[in-house]
Length: 408
Ligand SMILES: Cc1ncc(COP(=O)(O)O)c(C=O)c1O
Image 1 (tube, helix red, strand yellow):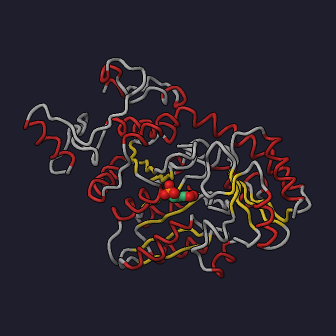
Image 2: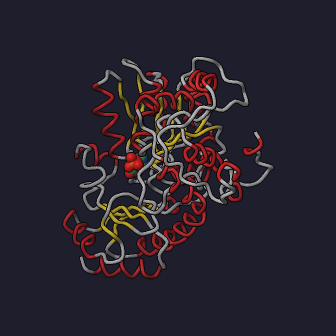
């Protein structure tokens, strides 16, 4: 198709115009917001054909697109965004959702049925943990896990023995930034005919591209770096067309698609994703170094400081350390809270990836659903702080952290 020709251009260039034809809208340079619930068919025959393809009743021609039907199925803003989301990950297709959680839930519900098994890596985002451990179990799905801070052979043995339908990993993991070898687990997935799904929210798609290492599907909380301005809640899945078309079918019937305005905002954000993330990462490197030397800080969790196998995985599959830092303060919850309440530039809020720097307490906030014993096992302590570094002037951030640490 003409409008999708890439002409060997790089994602940084294509991201500004890919998937949009100005003739669709009076030659407007930027796509308008198609704020409409439904679309007019040119003929009844067209309507019939669009439904046949959308519902998978008939095979579509290789070059044929699903016509526009209804905004729970598709909409130009969503299609432009989905086309652009394929670029950095070099994916065949993408699907956008109303949140990261709806992207995860819709994907899992597409491929799992009662009595199927899923193996996941722990730790992962607290909401995903809740979905797997409480919700999926209630639907008769067998939920198994391995710890990303343990010897890989334990996970390999578990997966070979249990032969799950899905291997679900989060790397770097939230909030410890543990690294998991995507290539290793993709080989394992192929061996047992499982799908490897990677939550790439923390580094992707700029600093980590799981499809290049053999993942089948990549999930994003687009609320984070992809939106980047803390003003949209959304999710995305990218990967092979054969899987994405199945996921889109589930999305149609669960109604977990996002709306044209949020899709438009995400499309706008994508244009600056790389430069935002690069600046955030530059700031994070400086801040991680500062924290490592501070006498009130016990331990810093940041990929640049990893050692042995964790560092080896980081160097193999990541193009940069990203802008998330966790650290343990010397002390307990009381000292952690005193630090958080003393911050003036950093905002005390969950979420991450936005232009402004945020700080939170995983133990009692994002990961509070996880049982205490489990939290300790996966390395979440009562004195742990998680930072999301923004684009501010880095010295302002360091001075803020310094005064709050000295206030403990
Ligand atoms: C790694 C990760 N995955 C998924 C999610 C869920 O995304 P959302 O909040 O957009 O539903 C989050 C949210 O914090 C996250 O950090």
